[in-house]
Image 1 (cartoon, rainbow, N blue to C red):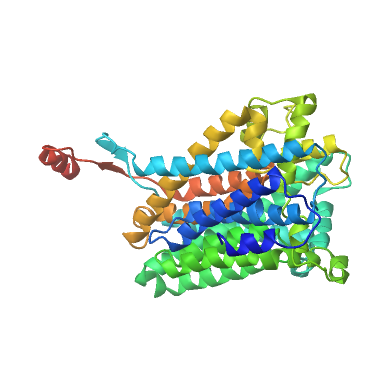
Image 2 (image 1 turned 60 degrees about the vertical axis):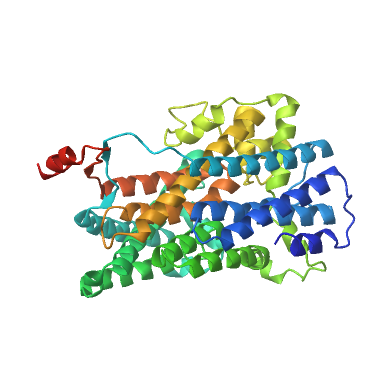
Length: 472
């Protein structure tokens, strides 16, 4: 990861110029490879940090390096070469800031609070209600889209079915897109959460494994997920979210599964994803084989560095930084455009329209989102905070999966962390506004099934008072 693969890519024949952007890209690739290797080899399971470095190594490291060597990009880069140099340098600053934030989280001082809300756990009757609701939502989506067979056809066909079900031919395209996101979100997210909670329950409780009702619910929920969350009809990054979340929920204490998932994830992203793109649409399977082994890395999925460079060119052309306006649109994603007439569009769509692209369904990596909103200092601060939060969440996950069984406190954290680790690929790729719909639905579902308890934390020399309060 650190030397062999980057060296093999860098030494491939190609018309690309070995300039500053090339050497910065090679440095970024080696740095991310070193950090991903450390995630694989560590004794502690770091799910969110591992997914961050996996995405960075593939999408911001190896693939852009191959594009530089071949002098070919998935999306046209309209600005000067200096914008690409700046984009790669800013990505390097972001990943270093993420590392610093994770390091600061290790030295976080112990809290001085004596009263605290205890860890979140699941309210079992509400879980049953969530499972039944997820069945109804998924069944509604299946009926609206024309039956089970549509979900095992091409992405093109299911996209047409979603458009027909939500009125894509109507004049209000924004309303149609919102309806499509609403239909697919409620059809896929609740049933995934139901599967994760039931899996957690079965893994940690012998009593649950002896109850036919729980086993039956898990079996039915798994079957529904096979239909609505399969890799044929869903974006590959969403299926990766489903796979990571399920693996890390089913095997919460297995270092072998953790290391295997990261290592296998790199292979899948480099080999399977590019070639699987041939079957995204019906006519793609007839494409001829490519001549260069690097050419699959120049297609569609890996346009993040190029789109960051285009975002810089877009800002330099006179648009400038938005100073939080794009972030406000992301946070207030649920506000309809009929109410907020000036609501900002996706960053990828906005930059794509400025470029004159016919297909504006383009990525906007988190680096570009933060830079466009808050400039280089704000982007660096954002990744510093992201590294800190990711490290704290990973530590909490290890603590909650190492102790407690069944629906003991911490069960929700044992579900949320794998889900965030998987969905991190979508958040890092962007645009953020597109990713917020499923997050909102997940938050609503988690809020409905989660309960808290208040716990006492005894200070030095006051354990007797704390014990009396607990008894009381």
